[in-house]
Amino acid sequence: MVKSITPIRKVFSTHANGNEASILMHELLGEEDGPTIGISAAIHGNENTGSQAILELYRILKDVKLKGRIVLVPVVNPYAMAVNHRYAPNDENDLNRQFPGTPTGTYSQQLAYCFANEFLRKIDVHIDLHSGTDRPTVDYVYIWNNDDLSRAFGSKVLYRPTHGKSGTVFGGTTTTVTVQERNIPVAVIELGGGIVDQRPYIKRTVDGLINMLKTLGAIEGEPVAPPKQTVVTELTGIRPTHGGWLEPLCPANGEFIKGGDLLGRVVSPFTFEVLEEIKSPYENGIMIMQHLTRNLVEAGDYGFMVGNLEGATD
Ligand SMILES: [Zn+2]
Image (tube, rainbow, N blue to C red; front, side):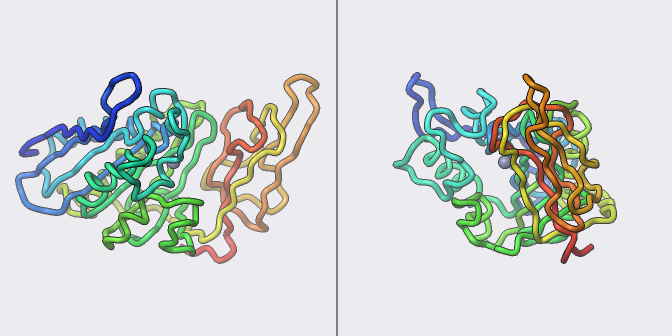
């Protein structure tokens, strides 16, 4: 059994409405000593599939024999999640580009500072859950510094960035940079999203997290071997240049797509004219992100993501 479960609230500032600006964590302490595993979600406020998975995971873990500690942060960016927005609306900063943050900055910069010091720098393993939003659906796992941990989640497609620990690769410094400064294992999961039932994605996330916890020895049981996996080192995000109905035409995530094949098209909701045809960029590609329903988009919104099978490995 878990020895104790302690909610920990860290207050770092105030909101203009007088409420405290804070992060809430749940510390699950096991009977036996062991490493501290941190699992977080919703650093981007409109990616809440992982938050729901942490809720389900919490319900399971409280009755499980645990070795070490697990710290759950179901919602890293609460202000953003409340309005289903990627960024906190009070400063519109991308929280996952602000690390290690500053105690004298904007709300998001102070939140990053608090999250770095109270969570990222106190854990021995980090698993960060991202997803698509309420439009695109995504399905891959980053390999940053620990193949076994990333593979144990069980996704078919993994992405090994060739830019390594570069802090500016996304145009800002992410959690992984702060975590990798201490050379601890980190895995970033991208799964779910879209205007579709999230329950299958939540279940896959919970199953994947449990398999990772078994791999790490935090809970008992033999981990399940991953399925056949493809590791890409290059992927491209393709955004529509027109607003309108984005109609998906591509195969499912994890499936192959040939160069020049249509990923989807943008159709005018008004004239019914095809405004744009979006083609797969690689000779041999694998689907990573797409829209599963006919969604209204603006120019520049997230469209599709395709991995390059050239140079990919098992
Ligand atoms: Zn994200």
